[in-house]
Length: 442
Image 1 (cartoon, helix red, strand yellow):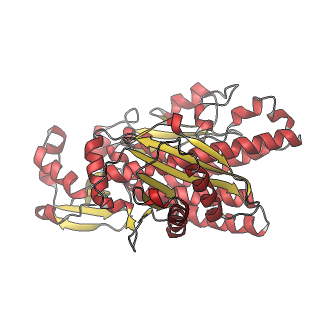
Image 2 (tube, rainbow, N blue to C red):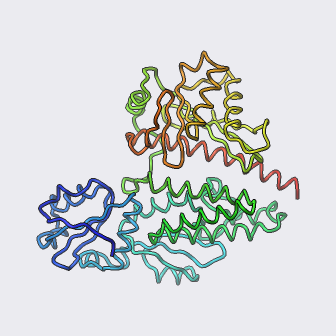
Image 3 (cartoon, rainbow, N blue to C red):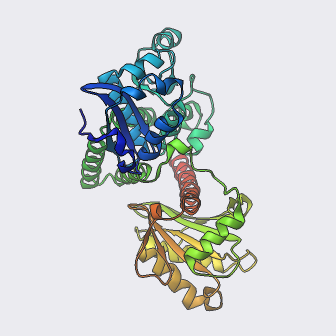
């Protein structure tokens, strides 16, 4: 069993304000196990509300155990594993198999992943061999967790493979077995095997994460990335690198118990006020532009500029760039080209904030381009860079970055949304060019 720390029930105020799992004990008997985004507040609620269910055991509680986790997703997974292992009396009393949630994984060439209540009915209904993970208590949080993890490990969720590419494939959230039915795909030898291997590998890693083996998955991915690089399989190495970054970002930023990150701020004036305070500016902020580069060892390199107006994406203002000047990988030079070409269009409205996907080097590259060629604009534009590895925000004029998790959640969500949208748009164009290239060669 995981190493819990224990307190007397009278010392609830000493519990941490952190995500994790808690339990109530009477002697050696575990009465109840739960998870929380804020352990202290959640446990206090058990004693404050003292509802019908709490009254069944709260008077018998002698000790409270807790175990902090790095993220709320890890708390959700740990709770499920502990309930399955320990069968706490009052967790089981309140629920039967119909009320718990399970993640189903079909045994197919292109595995399907779905949420269900009844494992036996699901197996009979789909007439497929299916494995199940669970039980999970919070269905809403589980659904949000799978949706977030899908960024790192795209998987199939449709009951039947459609005859045309679906939205999940367009969003890079599914390996796309549906594309095998397209006439163009039939001309590409080896494509089916490639998608099959990717589907099964992603499913295997997702299962391990849901079993609480995130660290082992990261170790395996890094090992595979190193081997692919040594074999000069740069495209595969790049995909593995992106999965590692995505998985780390998921566990650092996810707040699944509060729901998924809202794509648009509900109250822009308040968000703008916070953003102006963080940036140390008084100017009005209406337009934010996000930039990203997508390439594999410099080949078919593309750039993207996306636009948010008052905190919401304005897709008619998005722009894509096919990199012209380089054939070798050089993200800094590519970024400089994109920004130079962007500001050669004075007919496009200028932003008040630019968010670059990258770190200090990318920040300096953008600032240098503005200062050298567009000095009259540099004073009116704040330049930021958001590094993927630790979600560090670099701000023009500041020596040290700020961790995104230390910023107000509204700002953190907005900046993540802008960066992710720029990344999605750049990759979409990059893949389109790759597909055109494959078609021309076939």
